[in-house]
Image (cartoon, rainbow, N blue to C red):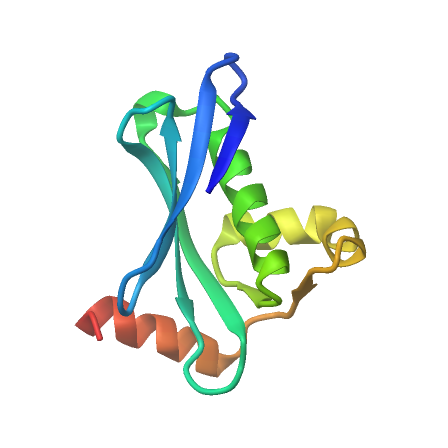
Length: 130
């Protein structure tokens, strides 16, 4: 999906989209290796084109390399390209959009604050897997 990214150490990084039901993820990998981080999301059911990001993590041994930031930026860029509204439940996404939200919107992105319905959806799918 997104190639040509470079982490803080100069290593080549790839971000890929892994669609699953009900929880999908963007994953980050170094070179051609296995994923070392992920940003989990659910898409709102029905007509709304909302992508609710609720959890982001990078394996501890790869911390400090800027991988989480690369992952967030790639996921947000993909959301723009798919005309999705981003709903940042994940603190990392929320912090990024607080800081860079104007830039995200200027690039064509749309985001909104999470509602109790969004939180209930995330809670339901992460507890039951459905």
